[in-house]
Image 1 (cartoon, rainbow, N blue to C red):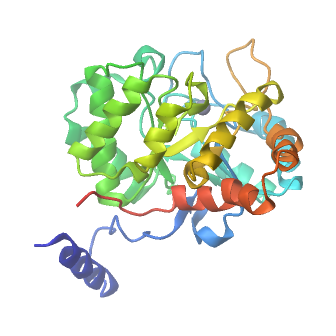
Image 2: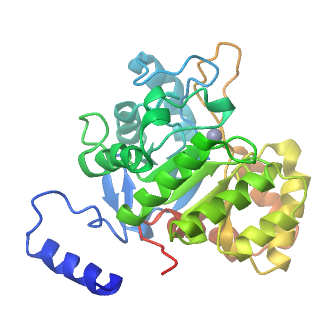
Length: 338
Ligand SMILES: [Zn+2]
C-alpha cells in the first residue's frame, strides 16, 4: 500500500477507535511534555538542550535514585530564574542510565509552571559507558521496540512519555554500537515522528555517517539534530548539514563564547539558514559527579541575545531562533525521504 494511503487508513481507523493498542502516530503535530501533549504554538521561548540534573561522571544507573526533595529545592530556583526571563519550555537531554528521572521532571514542571520535555534512547558517547549491556545484544528492531514501549506506554510505569529520542555517538568512524543506536532511533522516528537529538560534538565524520544511515533508513535530515555543533572547528560543515535539512544545535553557550556564537550565527544568517539553528547552554543545575559546579541557564538571555541585537539581528530573528525553530524541531511528525 502506498504510504500516504496507509497513513490515511491508519488515521481513519484511529478516529473510529479501531486500535486496541495505542496508535504511535496519534500525537502527530503536537509536542510531548512530561505533563502530556501541547500545541506547538504554546511552547514559547525554549531552551533546546539542558540538563536539570544528571549523573555524568558517576557509574550508569537506571533509575538513579535521587533524593527528590533535595534536587527539587536545588533546581527550582534556576527554573524560576529562566521563567522570569521569558522562557516557557526546557528540553531536558539527560538520557536513561545517565540520571533521567521523569517523575522528578514532572514535579519540577508542576512547581515551576514550565513545560519540560524528556527523552527515550541511549547515550553512546563517552566510549559507550552509559550504554546498557542489553543494547550490545539486541537487534536493531529489538532496541527500537524498547524505546517504542516508552513512547506508547510511558517511562517505567509512570505514564510519562518522552518527547524526543536522545542518542550519543563517539567520534567517527562510527562504532558498531553507535551505528545500531542511530539505526534503531531512525526506525523509532519512522513509527512515531519523534525527533532525534544526537550528541555528536565536533566529529564531522560522525555527523556525515549519521546522515547517511538516516537516509538508508528513509529518514529525512530534518528529523535529526546535530547536538554540540558549536564545537566544530569551522562553520562550513555545519552550513552543509543545515543546507541538507539538519538542525544545528549551538548549545554550549557561555558568556566567554559570545564572539564564537556571533560569528557562527552571522554565517548562518548570511547563508539564509538561520531557520535551521537551535540555541542552548547544555547547562546542568544539579551535577552529581562531586566536583562540578552547577551550570545554570540564563546567559543566553542576559548576554547573547542582547549582543545579537547590538550586532544587527532583528527581534524577529531572535524569536525565530528561540521560539519558532524549537517548535518546528520538536513537533512530533514523521519526516521520511519517500
Ligand atoms: Zn548535554
